[in-house]
Image (cartoon, rainbow over all chains, first blue to last red; front, side, top):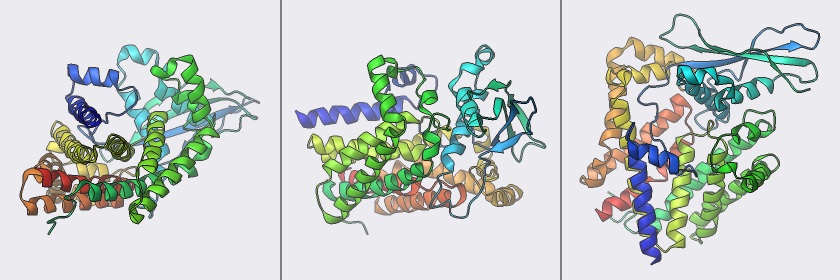
Length: 166
Length: 268
């Protein structure tokens, strides 16, 4: 009985992986809705659209005396010589990359509520984490992208100033 | 060359578990260096990532997960994952029991994958799949089926990724790899620029990656040299992406599946 159960588990798991790979399909929607534990991976690996841009998160703060600091980049992309073995920085960079990709995919209707999206809130939290809350009244961030196919950095998002809890 | 190698599920599972342990240990130590980011004002703040709508909305579960996923809970979770990973490597080397460290690694990996959706990548997914499948196999006495599943899953992973690339314009034009390598996030800008200049080489590298991924399932049904060729190409592929793209944990995470690919090949 146990072996039959294992067979069924593995068969369903593999079938769900394959079903989730078919774009815009009923199977994919069902699998994604039912996969509450994140067991069905999305094996896309830079496809169909390869990541050909670097995304840059910049933030600036408005101090309590009303002065505004210049924009500075948060966790800029960098190529370290040892990253083929040890590469913790990729987690923050991946967070910025994934949030940008999510924001770019928003349609017009969703864009109206962009400030309530997980991606926007994640970037705002990241931007707020780099300022001194004791001296900062509010924070603003912007997203830029650069790449070989762009002549100059392209502005993707510019937030309003958001209050920072002291 | 591989006659008898990983022809039994035990040896395939032992090596797969050991490599998954290595991958999980590196990945967890990397997470630990970022522990500041798990706080309420950090990049991985649970109060933000935990606000997504799903089953976590149930109040009781939500409170328990907050305790687990906010510091110090998440640091303890990472510590348990490291402990499981180290014990798993030791057990694989010492021919000792794998079940307890496998279950530990599966549960802690499952928690992490669900905690930080934006920060995880394919290596985290593969570590979870290997650890969880081997745990299920061990607990239900279905080691052979677990090894077969992992072999099939990695073949599916490559095939799905390869066919997805065929739908992309930059991939079909042979420009994708030079352009990706031109970024600082996932490349070496100087190498990317050189490949953009040398179109034919750039096209060759791009199409080689697509061909490797799409054709990988042939390794399961081809003769021995085909299997060996695909596995060698796979290792080179992941070593190459580690060096050029910084995808370091993919090397042990995907290598962990290769003994199961060989086991599945024997079965077929």
